[in-house]
Length: 207
Length: 207
Image 1 (cartoon, chains in turn green, blue):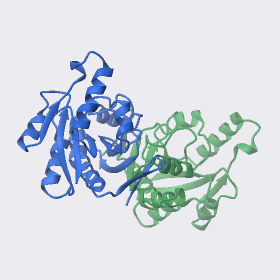
Image 2: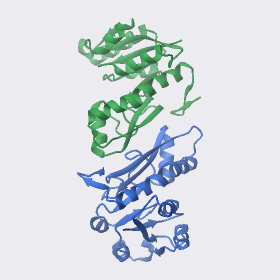
Image 3: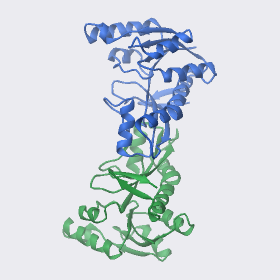
Image 4: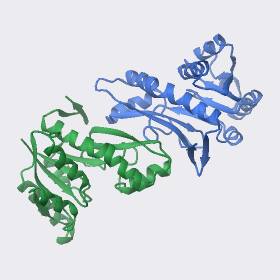
């Protein structure tokens, strides 16, 4: 059974989508071992508590320097012995050492069709602002493995979403969550839980 | 009635899609006034002939310098008094003077979801090669107005297309044509023919 650690910073709606998918049998052969937040007040920790999932908090602010945080963060993650680490709106840069140790075992959800509107500093609401600024008619979301670059890792699943005429960044963000993120993140986890995702030459093959 | 000039360089499958859409009544209130090719051997000119559409040829190779070509090309286009110029696989850079004169009256079809896989030197099969190289799971096509940049003009329509596991650039190119290009190019022309596309602040509004 795949043991998942979910890393979050905020409300945790993607965490909720994973919890629901496990409860509804959309994800089988997997369980959430722990939720780690860098923010003690993240509502995601409340969600974890409600479902009896271990919640934990670690923030760069608690440490003297980045090096110390990175070390402690990796130790904490290791302590839950995860098979898969899911970044579900986690706003902390993942240490290189962790990426190496968990190569193709860390996945992230990005609220656009990569390579559109991705790269350094483009996450959350800002992604949708950029999409509306460019005037695209189609956007979406991407689940990908995390590598050393920003949003450059192997793509697992993508789901397109239509932009509507009256969209604001907030409205578009909600539609992308509902129609894409909350679907493909659980789907990707279920595929991984059943050994159906392979990485070959930097690209995924879905078996 | 909207008078269209279609500019082509090759086989003209997008031209055929426009011709079919006019014949089938998918495009109304518009007619193709002429087809201009930069290549005398383009099969697109045969297609034009077959449907009794004026075919014309003009190539930079016939001119001493770019300036002279640009002037002659603009003169030729002007002679057909177009309301709309459709670039349907036209591999010649549109002169700045022509873009100015026909502001928001020149449209182009690009075989990806702009801003993914666009920009200088990325057209035709190369776009699909790049998409497969990156390992995207969703691609598509975009119809946009032509401005001074490369693929930077206001987006009119976009259509997503799924990438399949065994895709080669050729197979993907064909699917993007069938599922996206041949649909949204006629749709965009019909919207323009009925005055339903406005450009405000560099973005389109579909009425």
